[in-house]
Amino acid sequence: MYNITVFPGDGIGVEVAEQAVKIIRKLGEVHHLVFEIKEELLGGASLDKHGVPITPEALKLAQKSDAVFLGAVGGPKWDNVEASKRPEKALLALRKGLEVFANLRPAKMYPELIDNSPLKKEIVSGVDLLIVRELVGGIYFGTPRGIESLDGKGEKAFNSEVYTTFEVERIARKAFELARRRRRKVTSVDKANILESSQLWRKVVTQVHQEFKDITLDHRYVDDCAMQLVRNPKQFDVIVTTNLFGDILSDESAMLTGSIGMLPSASLGNHHALYEPVHGSAPDIAGKDRGNPLASILSAAMMMEYSFNLHELAFSVEKAVEAVLKEGYRTTDIYQEGTNKVSCSKMGDLVAEKVK
Ligand code: NAD
Image (tube, rainbow, N blue to C red; front, side):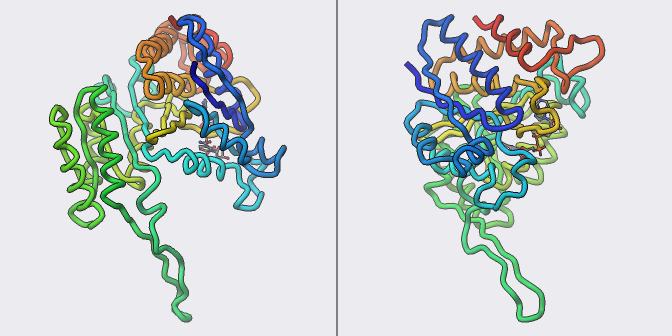
């Protein structure tokens, strides 16, 4: 039996999470497995009911479960609440509370959607890469940080990019382990020609590589990697990098494939895991059954793969998504003339029908 906490959240988070749950239930039926799903409020929905974006009870439930699924949080209704109560605070609390330090963002080009990519077909055809971003360290958390007055001569603002051997070791190990499930190639991205933190990063990644001799490792500077991602993205399998560089490169790689509605993600720690579509709560289309649920459904597939080691189930969801796209069904965001436009819930039904 697998215990899953689902936080539908706000906006289209609720609609797309419903489709992911549909798929998980179908997988349970077909494979005679028990997925025990408990739903909890998060973000604006929790703020409205409980006065906080995440309650201690909700966090505890997540910590006790085998995997956590999240739709999306936020929306204009809560844009003016005080900073500590903003729905997005729940994301940080959840990531911290679950100690998830590795953020995984695959970017895969589906042949049927190749015209959605802003790049030329020959460049993006066959792209299948995974960005592994360090999530809880680096410049977003490093101290000292702050803004100081310069006695009437303006201000000074500063942040610190800090990494320890331990932090780099665990993310590097995760990246090498993930590469073993794929094409066995890791590219470590840093700025070791300028930054001391990157010099340590490179040294430690190289040391950890000794435990993974079956994996090919290369190092690239972040500026070069940013360029290579649009020049020849097919050269990459797993890219492992810092919090800051990963934040930027994962958005760049996301655009290779065209639509934000297609992008799943996983955040892994040593004991917990959180799965969520990359997109937000899309207030402009919320409540209209118009969102693309495939990012959410593919996040559920990642849960099968990484939390439960149920490879065939993950594979069957991916194949079901491919089949539905091949048959020409599209949600509004990926619609093109000659294809068949369907709603969010219909897309969920179509994928569920195909799950084996
Ligand atoms: P967004 O991702 O919600 O939307 C950006 C654009 O993409 C919109 O036009 C939206 O309609 C479209 N879009 C997004 N997901 C889609 C899908 N599945 N299908 C079809 N179209 C889709 O980003 P935003 O507008 O910058 O943010 C809206 C709210 O979401 C804000 O409150 C923001 O803080 C929050 N947000 C939450 C998360 C999260 O929960 N992880 C992530 C990003 C933004």
